[in-house]
Image 1 (tube, rainbow, N blue to C red):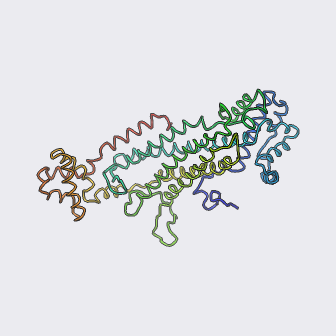
Image 2 (cartoon, one colour):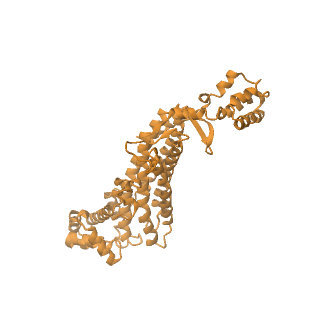
Image 3 (cartoon, rainbow, N blue to C red):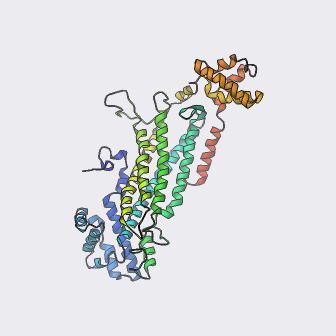
Length: 453
C-alpha cells in the first residue's frame, strides 16, 4: 500500500507523472545498478583486469528483470547494507563468473553512477517538456501579440500592455531555461567508478581506462577526478530545476489571479464532468492552476536538501548521500507534473478578450494618467504636469467621476488640450509602447537561439 502521496492512486498524478515515476521506481534503480555492474565487468574483461570469459558470462547472464526485489530487500535488511544483497543476487545469477562482479568498485561507484543514469532519463523528459512549454508560449505570444490588457503592479492596475507581451516575458525565461539545460548537461551526466576513495587503488594502473570505457558504454561522461566527496553536480542540476519550477509556479499563480471572478481574463481548460465543489454546483475552480503553483514550494524544499548534501565529511559519508535519495526523485517527479500541467493549461487556455478590454476601462480613464501627464508635460513641464494631473486623478478616484470629466473641468489644464486630443490620450490602444514589437523580438531570439529546434 502506498504511503507517500507521490504513489497514491487517487492523487499521485497531481504530484508526478507515471513516466517519471517509472524512472525513479525501485525496479529501475535496480536495473541501472545492474547496468553499471555489467558495464564495469565488460570494460575490465576487455582490458584484462578480470578474465575475459567471466566478463562475457556476466554480460550475457546478468538480468535485473529476473532478480527478485523482495528477496534482495529481505537480504538487505539482514546485511544492513544498501547494495550487498544486489551483488549477492547477481553473483548467484551468473554462477562462477560472479566472483568477478563488482571487482575493484565501491558501493558509491555503482549507486552514484546508476543515479546519474536515472538523471539522464529524467533530463531527457524535462528537456523535452520544457521545450514544449516554450513552444506553446511562443504560439500564444504571437496569437495575442496585439490583444490589449491591463498591466498590474503591486496587484493594482498600472498601464496598458498586451497579453502577448506578458507571454513573451515568460517565453524569454524558458529560452534561458533551455540554454541552462544545454549548458549543464555535460557537467551533470558524469559517472564515477574509481574505488573506495576515488584513487583507483583496487583496480590498478588501468583504473582510469576501465572507468572511461565503462562510462562510455553507459553513455556518460568521465570525470577528471572522482566526485564522491563533491556533490555540486547534483546541486547544479537541482538549481536549474528550481528555476524552471519557479517560472512554472509563477505562471500558475498569475493565471490563478487572472481567473478570479472579478478579473475573469483567462480560464483554465474545462471538461465535462469536472467538479469544482462538493457543495457549490456553480464552481469552476482553478484546480490545475493551483496544482501548478503549489508544487514549487515542495520542490524548493527538496532542492535545499540537495544543497545540504554538499557537506561531505572527509572522502565520503552516507549522511549527505541518503538526503539525495530522498530529494532527487521528489524534484524530478514534482517538476514533471508541473511541466505536464503547464502544457495542458497552455494548450487549452481560454482567453476572455472582451473582459480584458472591459477591465481597461474599469477606472474610468485613470489607467492612462501617465500618458496624460507626459503629453501635458510637453507644454507645462513634467513636474508641473505630474502635480496637476495627480490632483485630478485623486479627485476623480475619490469622487468616482470619469477622469476625462475632471480633466476637462480643471481650469489649470483645460486650456492645454482639445477634447479630441484628450480622447486620443485616454485610449489604451494608443499607449502600448513597444509591447507588440517586443513580442517579435523575443520570438526572433528564441528561434535564432536554436533551443526550440
